Each structure stands twice: as C-alpha cells, then as structure tokens.
Length: 279
Image (cartoon, rainbow, N blue to C red; front, side, top):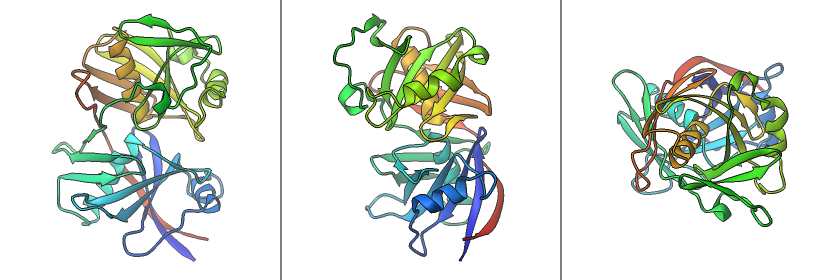
C-alpha cells in the first residue's frame, strides 16, 4: 500500500498530514509510529488527519495523533498547518474555516501575510477538567492563579483543550527540560499526563518558551503550550494581554484581552514536501 502524505511545519513543530476526505483511513498505533519515525518513516511530532465534517456548520473534522497512536485533544501549530493544507489543495476557498476536534470546535483564519490566526477558545482552570489531582497539596496564590508545588517546582495548571503545566525559569537555555519535563509529564497527579512549559519572562510583552510535550518530548514549538504559558503569565500578573512568544522554532503572537475572551494565536505554517510512503 502506498500512502500519500504532506509534510508541514509551524514554527518548527512538524507534522505528517493525511487526507481522509475521500477514503477511510485507520490511524493505528503501528501506522502512527511508522509515519512519525525520523529514521524509518517520514518523521514528525504528530500526525494530522483531514476528514469530512459530520456536523452542520463545520467545514472539516481535524484529528491529531501522537506518534504512539493516541488521539489527542488539540494542537495549535497543527491547526495552522491544517488550514494552509485544505486551502492550498483547493478543498475550500474560505479564508476562515471552522473545524471540529475530538473535544472542541476551532475557527482558523488565513491572513493576507500568509500567517494563520487560530481561535483557541477559552482556557480552562477547573482542576478536574484539566485533569489534575490536587488533594493533599497546598498551593501558593499569586495574582489570580494558584501555583502548585510538584517535583521541586511551582506549577500553574490549566487546559487549552489539552492539559498544561507551566513553570517560570530564569533562563530557558539552562532549564532542566530533559530531566524535569518527563517527571512532571508522567506524574500520577496528571491522569492523562501533561505538557510541561518552561517560561522565561523578558518583559510584560515578550517571553521565551520551551515545552516538553506528551509523547513527543521537547519540540521546537507548541501552540497550545504558548497559549497556556501566556494565559498563566497574565493571571499571575507577569504579562500583558498581547505577548510575543519566542520558541526555538519560531515566534508566535498570543492575545488574551480578558478572562471572558477567547485566546488568539497567530503564527506561520508551511509545506515542507509531499510524497508517498510504502506500508
């Protein structure tokens, strides 16, 4: 079997994109691992699947798989690639596209400068919905958000449709991403595991960020991680409502004007190459 694919990237966060609008495609754990393998497959942080919508008023179904084959809730950088993909292949002529994920509806806008703005919806702070098991822990309140003690760090815990823990560091280059990241990711207090953001605040409008992602390890950028870090920083009183996030793979603009607003993320999305893989 020969499977066509498109390799895309958004700020260095890279994806294999598959078209399942004309034929059914079963993304098994074996297929996800094969496609994601950087030596024996195509190589990607995640696998994105485009499907026909099942819901009136929604343009497409947007599915996201980790390299383990687990379907996950959200990927902001992937969402930007998604809209560039469907628009570039003539699957829609709309500049604004509505897509449904496993647990959400997203609005994606293709801008005139080639960047994409994603409406990431509202952040979730209810710990049971993250989910995060807080029993027995005593948080420290700062601004309007709790910081939870775990693994020797203080974590802001929230969801952007997927779980995030954010900790502030003095210098992201020296942060223990490779050691502390996996310990927090797999901690028992996060039943569905968690994406771990290491945040360095440069000013109220500019930060640096590294993220250790579930199943993928550290990636060059994480869209939901950037949103979670900025939202946490705003709630904690560190940041203003419009923040430039410098990830290792590129820059993202995150906007969150107030608690009732949706989070907006703007950034690049590009096609790297297209091909077929023999399975």
